[in-house]
Image (cartoon, rainbow, N blue to C red; front, side, top):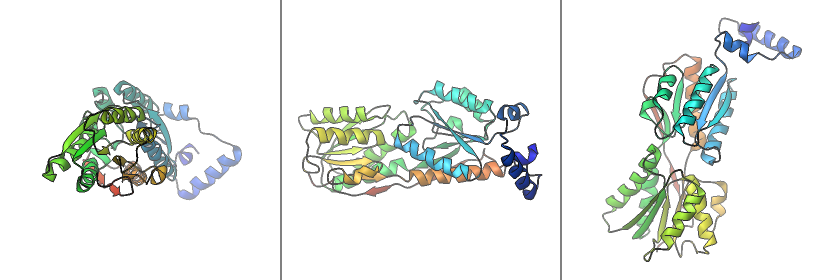
Length: 316
């Protein structure tokens, strides 16, 4: 009975069906602790993210949960607040209960012990990539995202442009600010640039960055944003300052929340295929878990962003 309930491959599908029906009628609930003591791998998959308040990560959690549930795996969520010691603790706890695998958005500098433990556990990195943790990664082309948004604002004729985003400590932050800088350099034009880089990204930092930029004598005529959390703070501060967009200032956001299309004249923004990326990651991970695939081989899946042009950008 135990093997049938554990979905053992040696048990026929018909026998599994009969045993599961009988167990359901009897109200049987598997004892997870007992299974752990026998060294049986659980059906849990851990998801480790920096901040569950970020819509990026809540969208990822929802998509992964649906994907994993279709194969009878259950998602358990852990939050690190971008602290590598919290990250290590979660990895230890998850592996102590024999999780089937771990999907993680790593911190900036993972602890060496995290890498050591993960070598013995099926895992994959999502959005961010820390070389210390392996070569399997699903992500977004962050450099391209900011290159295209910056190129658009330059083509509108802006010569004073500010970038608000994360620090270069994180690989995503580094790629985004590099995309911004490359677009400015490749334009061949003389452009006055301001960079407001902060970690962690937050609505508060976005607000503060706008206040600092607006206090400048020759303040920027356009804002390019490179983080979801910063975007919400920036547009709130612009609204509180009663600025007319794009007459007083042009804005390009990052991420495409439902309300962005109705904000002011509609927010021009970088649309990110987060749900699709998470689903692709989940399906790939499931395939390797179920078929005992080699998770040590390098693998990268990079999803392209899309610039959605609405009414928040125009000529200065």
